[in-house]
Image 1 (tube, helix red, strand yellow):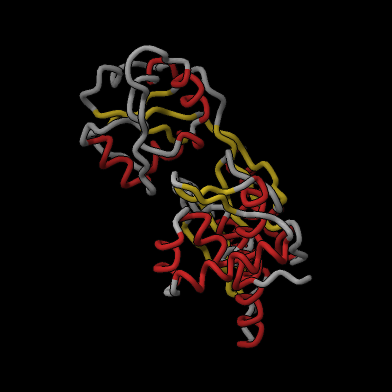
Image 2 (spheres, rainbow, N blue to C red):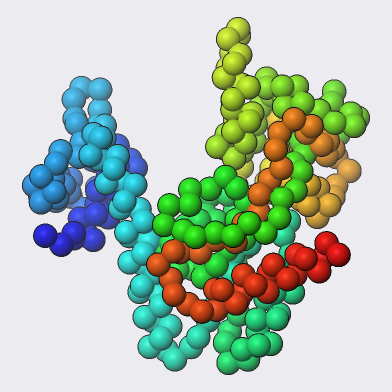
Length: 291
């Protein structure tokens, strides 16, 4: 039995919304049609994907597993469409994704010089899509900041760098030479806690009073605006503190968490020889910068 990508897209919409009506509106389908398609998918897979009762719609264990797999399958299908379209157009493009605060100019320029017939492009990413752009083909290789889900990927460690707390300039800790992650445990985090697992660990140790909360901001610029407004703090790599300078925020080293890893990552199934070439160029650039 071959998986129907259309039914997988329907399933992902329901799994993300956990509501058949909202999923149907999102897909521009009638709700009964969507329900039939999900039942047909369950029949094909011989597995129940959702439970529905008076508390709402929930994923089953089989549903959780399919959601993990479907996200990658749909992204890979999208990537294949992109590659075929580029091949049909007769263009060869190699795209490098990169996170804020990282400079990729030297290896990108070197790859372009070595292959003048190839368009070497760059794509700025963020915490939410730095891996997604690899799976769906928007980028051939990416500079990613850990932690990320490396399922289906290969990666190579480039370097590590210390992390700093970004605080309002008027904050009680702003003048410190360094802080502990425990000093920040009751503060509002302005990014997803998966990006700062050390904060999440100490925050869950708090048993008295309200739990610390986080307010997710996608870009560094958005984080800095919210920090400056006194809405919370953020944890960023040290390079970001050099790249984004402004007088209304303070950057204080965090003494007791490990450094941030910067890795090059790419889809494991890709056999593009330019990937290995770019990895070597990027590693050379790091060594030259450190010498």
